[in-house]
Length: 339
Image (tube, rainbow, N blue to C red; front, side, top):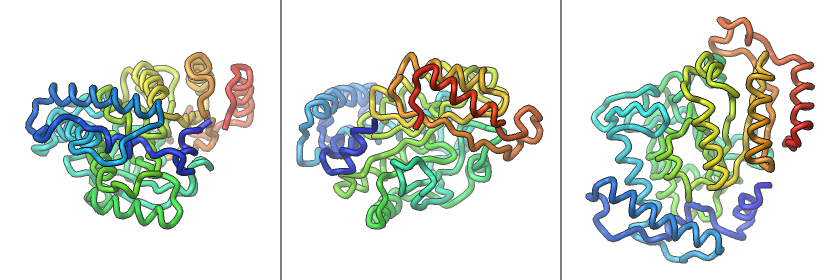
């Protein structure tokens, strides 16, 4: 489990983004090409990446333009009719229009530090918390930054790359992009990784997400992210709509987990919500057991009623001991090895 992640940390192979920076992608002047042509160049270069990654061989010299640079160009184009998440607001963020998340062209960082509260395989994790979110979870524990896209300071990719270097000197094992949610900040994240350059050769990238990412954004993440630290929260659309104001949840999120399963390695988080053992936790476990039985599965019991949870009496409590025991029994019955 997490074999590739540890091989990157151990210096046995480079991180995916480093390999992508060595994959040639067309000729000079790609900035002026239509988006359809950029996608063609991207997909052809991705074939080269996939071959290199599978064979364990890669060019030593950076390419220009590289696959990584074309990914950044495509992410910037997405700002003009934003569809970085599956809300697909379509707003033109370049001219100041704001969609559901409220994130503008310039990302904002609420905080950034070496995080020791993540899964043990990740810590210390250099975690960058972006402001704004694509969900409105009524029990959000980071509501102060998730619900306020104006929180924090403007994100400077050059500064963020410099901070990641300093984090590495202090012992960080990865770069962890979270929020809020990282989706609206894809362009900033890719530019930060490009500025990190050679220094990030053995620094794994972590996409810490609610997994309501658009298909196009998932294509851009391939060849960049090594770990998907990903929430699978609801086993049905009704609960997702009621508690997070999101539509078509299960189809989109299960689709993205299937994609991520092919692209990199997954650390799946399932937060046990009180009263939602069978409608959510059990259904998610059943899907996981059928579709990716060997995945890293973190069943989380630390739910506490935060933010506006008090207005929903059915979840205005912590999970009971009986719910926890039954959740563990369901995992055992389905053959899910909990981490």
